[in-house]
Length: 315
Image (tube, rainbow, N blue to C red; front, side, top):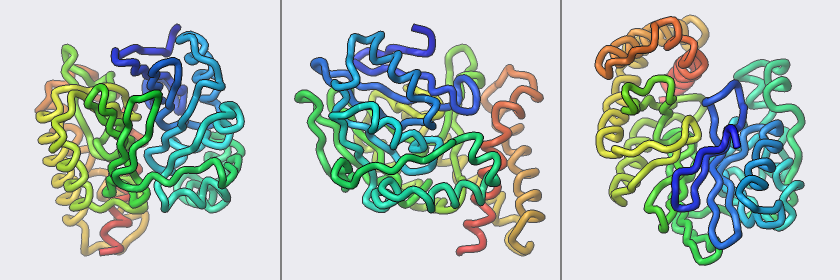
């Protein structure tokens, strides 16, 4: 099936179609005829997941868990639609995010503040509430049983205070949401991936992000499965790059600490982030033309700048 990538160990990436191809993956974990899904994309992603389940011989009734890494809507916007489609599933979400799944109006208000109401509706459509009795709070250390396969919850703030990562004990791999950054395949050089942090608003906390990454590193994972985008290995190298780039983002922000918060400071930060992107491209040997690099990273750099401005204002 096009848009379905198998990585072994019963792990698949499903192309969500969110904001274009190869931007946001939904991960499918299959064990003993049962399934878990990691993140949801938006409502439009449901059809792709249903097709992926059919392609792997699984029914909607086989889905036991929908695992949200956090409640930003590119990860959780389709949660309500998924729960309607998968009648046996439990929705697993950080305790800070659970109430927003039951009553999602504040979520939409928050994303509207970032994207604007019209763009937010275009991206996410209607947010469907999830019944409270179908929600499991993803507390740190919680172990989920997927047909005997243990998936352990790690509380991983830094990108957001409602962020968790899921450690699959079978494959010794993490499903990292945004905590381990993003790694678009378009930027790979001869199969060698790069990494870039996500400092999006409104809860970026650099020291917490460093700590969360170190905590995952301590498990010596075989791979990381990023929502943006799918499997990366060579984890020690990428983790070192991620730590370096988190610090570089902080340094960019602090350069403009004396400027009043708001659009003008965001523009200054964004301009410096593009310089950082150019430096990183040279360091990693990216072969993509500069205009294409800007197209691939445009939204992420804009959101990173917004998040850094908010972080400065809240220090």
